[in-house]
Length: 616
Image 1 (spheres, one colour):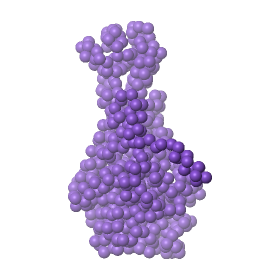
Image 2 (cartoon, helix red, strand yellow):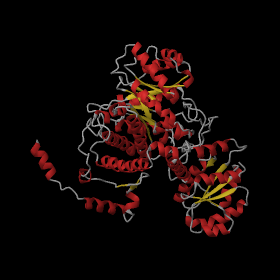
Image 3 (cartoon, one colour):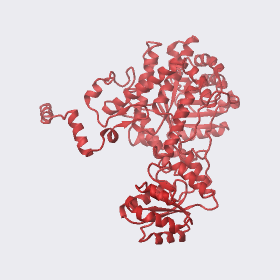
Image 4 (cartoon, one colour):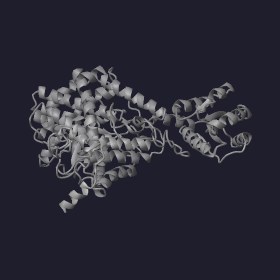
């Protein structure tokens, strides 16, 4: 058998890199290789369309094994098991307890409780955790950092009272005063003094991690993958430094930190991000202690809210599913799937059920929990992991040069960088350089909001009033288009956009489809047509349909013949738009035509302009 395999491979000559390149360029038929085939990432590096074994042979960790330092291939060697986590906002402890017990029966293995600071008490915890075996379920708590130490003491007393095995109790408290600096501009430096006592409170519970790095807040504010990774590493290093300087053993300090990472929709990049995160964190911890077990990064992944939409919200399931797959294949410890209706309502029971089942599907039907680092050895993923790690490390070093994450956050440099990225991405979405299915690309033409309104993020900690430090601005990528569409819905009359299709069949159909998608993003009623013999016939049909906007759709060559006569015949009775950017544009403008839509148009600004012209 071995001989036959050797003969099989010897019968084929492996093509060289240049032969692959020559074949690709031949298939491109003169198109630019760099523009068509090379992926220029937002992270500042480029990825080739193909990689070969010799590309990854040079990478230092390509032969690393799962479960071994520096854990690029995962913390575990036997399986890829993770916790299915669902968060519960706690007001009435009995109701929260009943919900927790119910969802534990439905596949959840990790609970997250968001507790208002004024409710923290031993009595509350007794009611909240009644009937829950605390050494069999991962337990996570979020409350105001000012109450974290008190909550920690209450929990330890509860664990002891219940006789729980300290080696099996697993979870977190989510103490992260640095988050308040980033998200609220509030200087919470004073609270860092509680970190040492908090860690020492759980010293006997090696799997309970009270310190959190809530980097998912950056992802939800639009950060690129290298940014939330680089900042997360600096964030974690700040806590590690603060704890060790306070006298905490570095092994205890490292094992007390939990990373809550956001996962965005760039599928392969996010797989690589999780792998790179473990690798880089292991290198950081190794500078504090030679204990390799302490160098394991523990990650809970949160699917992002940044790309979720109010309109066509079922598409959010597709987004979060690919994000969940990225997290699972990347090898995280637990996952929180954001319900699809989170942008506009407190998630319903149905939405929460779907979110749970998205993870259970990957486990029970796809067996993602059985495959250890399935991406390992992929030339592309290995190269992507290395490239992303390089960019994130540069950002980490830049933060350290500023004096560390705390100094950078207090100076506002982290927040300003994230806000600039967010603004850039919103601008790109407005120009359709960044697509949001169902929002700025292929919107649902007939959908109405049905009184849905965007919600502000919930389950916030309360640490006093806002501060004077710059804060990150959390605004979903679709928010600008949603505001526009909601405004259109409130108008006395929803504008009707009529496609005056004429001339070349292929071109008029293509431009009509483009224009319908372009204009429906504002909530306009769009009417497509099979074609008209004359512009007069088309204009008459548009006016009969009550059109507020008439879009002429034809070929570039035929616009010279049709565009001006149609404009003159319409005679200002509706807004007139030319679909495309024909060579005769200047001639059309000289005739008084002002409105053109094409692939280079700023869709958002154009639609706002049309709303203004229509009195909306």
